[in-house]
Amino acid sequence: MTCAFYPGSFDPMTNGHLDILKQAMAVFDDIVVGIGVHPGKVPMFSFEERARLIADCAGGASGAGLRVVAFDQLAVDAAVAAEASVIVRGLRDGSDLDYEMQMSGMNGVMRPDVTTVFFPASPATRPITATLVRQIARMGGDVSAFVPANVAEAIRGKTA
Image 1 (cartoon, one colour):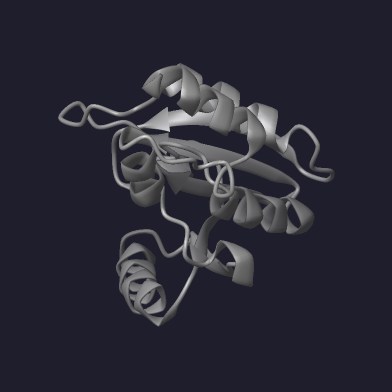
Image 2 (image 1 turned 180 degrees about the vertical axis):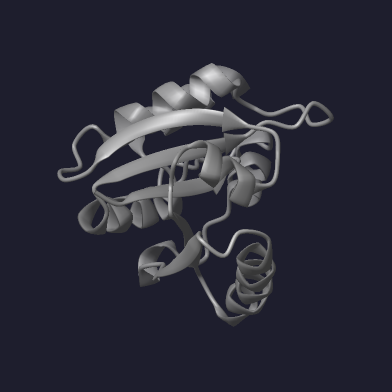
């Protein structure tokens, strides 16, 4: 069994995140979604809210087992703590590739037993970022085209 670790802030979970998660669930036996928790940042959603939204979003996906954990250390160390041998990363464009290749290389030096696997974002999800979704939502815009329905509803509850 191969366990993969998918790290991110997921604040909020976007259609792009879900796209990558579904691709990973089709390949790996178990997926651990690692929600990065940083004491200096004030997220839109608490860890518990994000964990619930992710579980609800992935509920319809078939394949792998899924669990959600919080982490506040290096993602590669969190992957090891989760007993994962793979880190999952999504790529939207060439700038993502450049950054992720650097991170993958450094992670490989620190933890040679953990491999990074890249999944390409689908064309429809490439422009989506959680940062832009938060900005649009805070300014009263409709984010329903960029996030799963349950997340859009939760965002409306936060911004209404």
